[in-house]
Image (cartoon, rainbow, N blue to C red; front, side):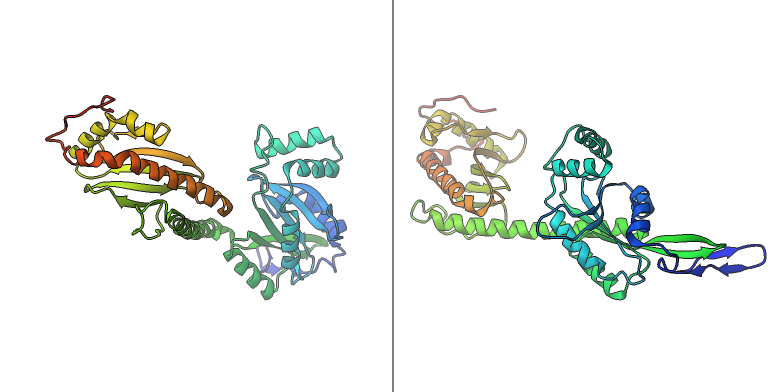
Length: 378
């Protein structure tokens, strides 16, 4: 990296110097200037503190602490050396220590930093974030790290690139001073990630995270089904020949092709379902027939069910939703699973006596002699 002066006769390289030789100190000069001109090294960041050390059992200080437009905290670590020292290790330590900061705490810190009233500091933060009111759940969901130095060693750049591949968000910005006509100039350049590749890198990281999340969800669902099937043994034989799945449902037949008892699970919701997924016309006829027995079925269940004929779709379903899912926390799984199992036992108890007559129902023969207690669902 070099900076040149061009005139009509020649191109002359400017003299590269160090901050030390220029008499510029880290805190008293570089930090003091950047805190009021932070856009020089990072855009859309509001500095809320400098030399931050508001924690117990540590005398360590964050050079500059900020927040970005996404309400993430930003740790800015400054070095005036040509190799960056151990900036990445310091910044990671600071990021971990600061990650629990709340919006309320950030407001207090910002108020002290600017020597303003807390109410004014809150208004300024809300304005910067384009929020109408504080939102603790959305604040500080992540911590970004920005390392600023006159240069970075290969050890630092290699470490930062590896850490970024493992979902940290670290940028390296070079501030190289030059001397020209007794004036000090500074060439500022982000070197990691390269600005022109940053959007692409973010998309790659998001894709990798989505893939990782999907695998994690599949693993959690498998473990949930494994535990549910184990708990169901002795309570119902309906799923005795069913294996755990990575999908969001497991099913068992009822003796009629295309009709199934289903357990379904989502992140925070579970369901017990009787699904009609055979021939479309037969499904609708059978659903209508079951709907004629709605009161009897719900009486056995002890609560109302969702009856979804699903219009022109092939399937129709009868559902009981249960609060809680595979992301509710494993300590809650047994309670959720017991509710699902008990509901399935009742659903089979309600449906099974109707199976012999239900077999006779089809699109060509949709009415069966016998008592009914409801009109067909629509």
